[in-house]
Length: 228
Image (cartoon, rainbow, N blue to C red):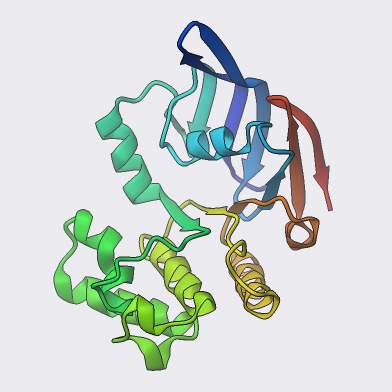
């Protein structure tokens, strides 16, 4: 039986915009098992970004419960949320978010640096992951010397470096041409087949078809939850 690693129970998120209360999520409930591959879809303003921020421990729900692993992270303070992000989550962004002054290997090492890992151990792990994503010959290159697809590979290796419980990807092919985008999605497929849990926000149905399950939001509600 698969281990449940994410549980949302009646999660709501409200934002106060002056006198107006914006209800971004309105009682969303679902669970995610280890090894699943999920796409989150829906029109602009439906709550996708809010949901991703909550899953990534970048924000807290207004009400409801969010379990990550066996921890209730719903009401953790900022320091505790930061520790959970560093230890249990990996992030892949549309714009890569690489540090331009650092090499491929150094960019991959960054999360381990913040965890205070030994330098030799971090360097070995980063080089291993650079090779794993097909960048053996590019380890000392800077981001501006790489194509978009190669930069996204660096971002994926960085997301893997702490062996996360969940990898969160926000429109990971949004800045890529179709060939590079397909290569990144094939890499995600391989990672999932190796047992990694992936959650991907996308507006593109052809991208979502790579996932095993699609969650669709509308107006802050969970409109559908379909396993492919």
